[in-house]
Length: 71
Image 1 (spheres, rainbow, N blue to C red):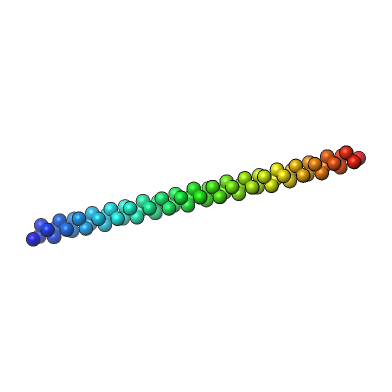
Image 2: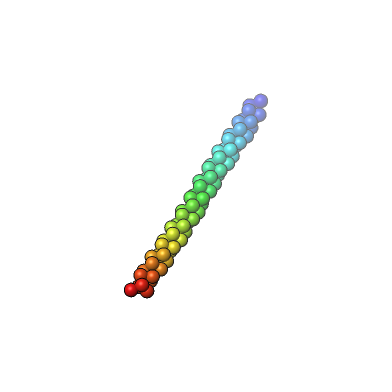
């Protein structure tokens, strides 16, 4: 009888350990996905900043050239 209790306790603790490992793995995966999406958002934001600065420089350069041609 005690053999069955020990075997059942071993299986139960093994299942708990496997469940804890799965939870830790999923928690790590969620963290990785959050990091990757944050990095992508930052890259997209920096791309927009570069585009806006580039357009601003082009407009400023065209404005400066038009003032030179008027003089």
